[in-house]
View 1 (cartoon, rainbow, N blue to C red):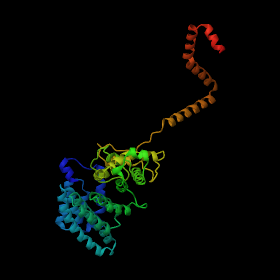
View 2 (cartoon, helix red, strand yellow; view 1 turned 45 degrees about the vertical axis):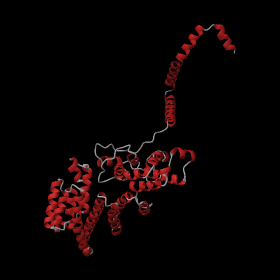
View 3 (cartoon, rainbow, N blue to C red; view 1 turned 60 degrees about the vertical axis):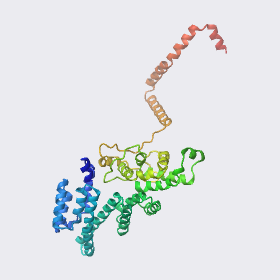
Length: 408
C-alpha cells in the first residue's frame, strides 16, 4: 500500500485495519526462537515498529546480518516499493531466501518443539511470498502465470484454505474468461460444509446468469413466466444477495466503489466493497448480467420472512457487522446497512386501533364514572357541528317539508 501513500499522500488503511495487519505480521512471520538468530530478532522488532521509516531501517539491518532473511524482503516490498514491478523484484529475492529457509526447516521439523515452530513460520512466509508474487503477475497482465502459481500453491499446501487463495484464482480465471475452469473451482469450494464468501456466491450467480442474461427481458418473463434456466439464475442471485445484501448497490453503481481495506468482514459492507472492486468488470463483460441483477435482486427481501434477521438459506444475518465495518472503512465512506423491511399500512393501522381499544377498555374498567363523563363530552363535541347544521336547515326549511319527510 506504500505506493498509494506515495502517490496521494494519504493513508490507504484505517488505524484499525493497520493494527490488524501488524498483528498478522507478528503472528505469521515471527516465532519464539527468533531471539536465537540476530537477523530474525531484528525483523521481529521491525514488525512491531509503528513508524514506516523505522521498519524499513530495521529490515535493512536484518539483511546486513543475513542476506537470506526472507521476511525482511517482504517488509521492503510492502513498505518501500512504490511500483508493482519493484515489489515483484523484492518478492523474488524473498522467494529465493524463503525457499532455502523452508527446506532447511523441513529437515529438522520433528526434532523438537522449537524446530516445529520455526518450520510453521517458514511455511507461512513462503506461502505468503508466492501468493503475493501471483497477485503481482495478475496486476502486470501475466494472468496465466498467476493462475499457475495459485494452482501450484493450492496443490502444495492444501490445508492453508484460510488464505482464500481459491478466491484469487476465481478472479484470475474470470479475467481469462475460462468459465469452465471457474465452474470446476466452484464445484470444489462451493460445498455445503465449507464457509461461503461473496466471491463464491456471486461468482456462482454470474455463471448461471451468463446462460440466460443476453436474452432476458422482464416484460417477456412477466408474460410467459420464467424458464428453468432463468429460475436457476434468479435463485442463485437471491442466494448471493441473502449472503451479502450490500454487493448489488456497488455492482449496479448505485454506490461508489472505493479502495477496499486489507481485512474484510464476511457478509459485511467491507466484503462488498472488496468484491465489487475486483469483480465489477467481470459482470460488465457478461451481456445482460447486470440487467438481470437489477430486475431481481430486491426480490430477495420479499422472500425472507419478517423479521429480516431470520435467514432463509444461511444463518441469520449478523447485526454486529455494521460496527466492525465502520472501523475497517474510511470515515468518508457511508457504510451500507441491512435493508429494513417496511410494514404494510394496514398492519400498522390495525395494531394501533387494537392498542387504543385495549387502553380505553382498561381505563373504563378502572375509572367508570370519569370515563362516562369523558365519553359524553367527547360525543357532544363530535356531533356539535352536525347539530348546528341541522338547526340551520330547520330554520330555512318550512315545517310542512319536515312533516312530509317524517311521514315518508
